[in-house]
Image 1 (cartoon, rainbow, N blue to C red):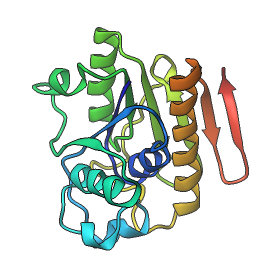
Image 2 (cartoon, rainbow, N blue to C red):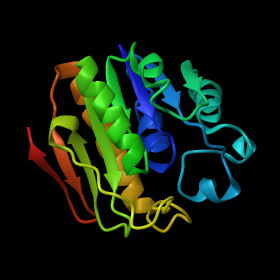
Image 3 (spheres, helix red, strand yellow):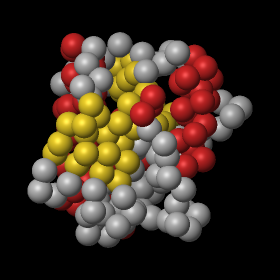
Length: 192
């Protein structure tokens, strides 16, 4: 089983770390670099600052838990989405923008690949874990809008990352596709 995490910022890095116990190959795709400000809301450690996020997460899983993973430090585009996603048994969307989500969704549908999305509202009031057939990505209020900076939404990011990891585990172990609404007071299944 190959699980491909597309975007390993706040949601993706948190969920990926919590999937370290699966008997699967974890693959990370992210073009961005770890910045000091990311340490407040993302699952990176101080020595990772300046490194590519996908590579940094790969090294952390190996150094901290002995888990081998694969990393691709590139931006997913129309030109490489097929090469990056073709070997996936499960795609996990943790992107923070509509354009990347739509690109990944179009690929997954055309290739018949299962795709689950993890998304956080920009104001930090709720998050969603939703399978592709029931997910419509929202546009950002402003291009490049940050939703997970500064750690202000860290409790919700933790709950959302854990819920996404559990969704991945349930799919891997039992083939279950469960959608969930995540808030600070409840984690509510919406479709089973």
